[in-house]
Image 1 (cartoon, rainbow, N blue to C red):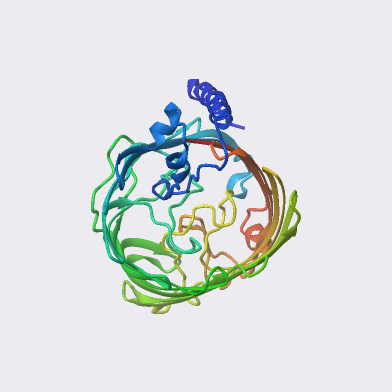
Image 2: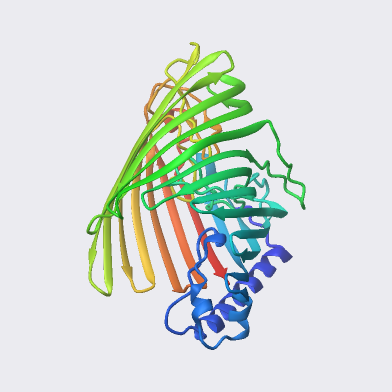
Length: 458
C-alpha cells in the first residue's frame, strides 16, 4: 500500500471532528419540521427558516427578509472522503489510499421575479500519487447565474450544474470530488402538466488550480430540449428529450476523431402504491469523423418498498442494454456515449461506464429510522465482442483483446447514517471478481474498493 500521511490528512481529521460538533449544535436547535437541503442548493426549501417564530443567529443567516417577496440566503457544505483501492484496474499490487475534500459556499438572492445565485467550490486531494481530473479543482466558481420569471416562463443565463431525469445522460456528477459545470442559456416553460426546457450549454473544462477553468470553450458544446409530462401525479410521468453535442478529438475502439452526436430519448416513470418504476430508451445518430453513428441504450429499473413505521425494506432490479461497436473497421460507429452521466453509475468503485455493456443488477435495502443498509450485485457482459470496455469517464480503459463476453461480478454494500438534515455519514465497499474478458487479458486479480464519506450541510 502506498498511502502517504501528510499534514493535509491531519487537517481532514480536524475538519471531520469540527463537522460533527457543528452538526450536534445545529441539530439541538431543531424545532418542529426540518430544513430541506437539496442536492443542488439553489433548490433548498428554506420555508422552515422563514416560518420559525423565534430566530437564532443561524436562522437569520439562512433567511434574511428584504421585502414582501424578497430574501437573501447563505449556506454551504463540507464533504470529506477517505478512499482506498486494492488491485485497482485489476493489477496486482496497484493499491493506494487518499483523502478527498470538497468545500462549497453559496449565496441566493430572490427579488420578486428575479433571482441570482453564486456558489464557490474548493475540491482538493491529498496523498494520491496520480490525481484524476475529477479529483481536484482548488478554487472555482461552480455556479453563477441569474434567472427572471414571468407568467409560465423562466430564463436562466450563467454557470450551472446540470441535473435531468434519472441522471443517465445529463447529471452534475455528484459521486466524484469535482462536480460538472455548464455555462449555458436556458428557457423553461412550466404548467401543471408539462415542463419544457430548451438550452445551449458549454461544459466547463476542469483545470486543477485556482480560478483557471476556461470560459465558453467551443471545442465541446451541446444544445437540446428536455420535456416532462405528468399524466397522473406521482404515478405516471414521461420525459421526452433531444440532445445534440459537438466535441473534438474523442476516442473509441475505431480511433480518435471529431464527433457530432444527436440523442433522442424517452423515459417513463412513477411510484404507484409502493412500486417504483423507471424505463428509459435512447437512440443516437450523427457523425464520427467520416463514419456514421448508430447507437442505443435501453434501461429498466423497478423496485418495491414495504414495511412499517420503524422498518422499511426495498427490493429492486436494474438492467441495461448499451450498444457497442459491431466492427471497428467499417464506416459505422455503434458505441453508445452517455454524454454526461452521474459519476457513480455502478457504485463509487466506477470501474465500468455505460458503453458496450449488458448488466443485471438486483438490489436490496433495509432502513431503520436514520440508518440504512443497501446490498447489491451486478453482473457485466460486453454487448459487442468487437468493442472494448469503457470506464466511467467514457475512456476505453480495457481494449478488445479476445472474444470473451463476460466481464465480471461486482458485490457492493453501502451503510448510511443521517442523524439530522445537517450531516450524513456513509461507508461503501465493492468487490469485483474478473470474468473471462479480463482474465484472458491478463487482469485476473480481485479488485477491492472502500470509501468513507462525511458530509456536513448548513
